[in-house]
Image (cartoon, rainbow, N blue to C red; front, side):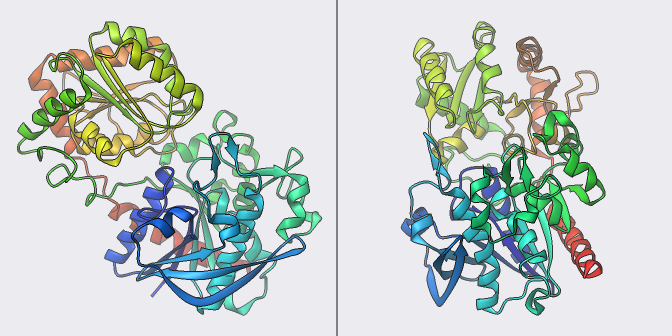
Length: 483
């Protein structure tokens, strides 16, 4: 049986800042359902220790050189499928990567320790993985370490690596002065190696040395080969193009199921939508918005320029004048916190703004909204549109990345489609998609048809998990050929 290790900086239900946690947590759950020998490994953060999770020490310790220091860690487990590396100096903090003022200044040391710690933990646990599935820059040194520091090590003789790029905009860039902390030679600090415009680039290490590369949608895998979307790494990616694959994310249908969701006031499904109508009424009342007959548009997610929040704010006056209500839930850039809060006060009977994240409210917004807005500048995959369709909340999205792959533009003649797409990153194009949605809202038969179309699409994890298994086998083959 293939032995799978998913190395990740976050995963539900343990620690989460974004969609990466949903992906890794859901994937391990699917593998376990498939009877695979699969495990997660992640840092033991403060929020994990504070959670009601029965962790158990393995009484195994690791020692990792970080520059001229030797940092000790302890391995914990949450059976049957997760391991944690404890190092309070690095991970006993309120947040995972930084504060609202910026990233932690020692993030290079923290994730050098974690990347090498993953390999040392494998040795201590006597678990020799066939594949290590790495995720984003925080684990991207693992393939490099395997091919350099652990080259010829019999323990990892049959281990392949796959790196998933969840968002190439986050690369793990650090000053050149941090290079000695990696334990790697300066011969790697060059344009053909992990140097990037005078800095150390952790993600680049993974792009060069992982056996197989994936990203989280077919379209995004094509987009990042171009300068517009690659954040400077198009050259490296073009060299690895034959090893780059798109695997679409899924969602956990145990968590996201309107027929048995404990957070929503009335349950519903595609055979009986009465509960969705009640969910909207209750949400409007909870948010103190006026006129429940207006179409309700929702936003749930990170409040950043990447997610199109600047475009949303530019379009806000036009949206309000179109006669709609809005609810926004999320956190992100302070600038957007301020501007959205101001808009909420200015249009308090039309817009409800909630800065932060509330799990129960998120579920209520998905269930109670008529439409769901994702005007992203770029979007590797996106989970919001998958969840919104599951709950019959019609997505209005910009045609980029995974949004293009998962949302079919509605055709009023054939009645086919699951949402509304727009292409140009302009208020005019965005507002035009909203107007098309409002037109459908006034035609209850068309609206119901769209809702049913959306709710019946299958975005469960099974198909994606099976595709990853195929790519793991490919990565293992490639690793063995190279040896």
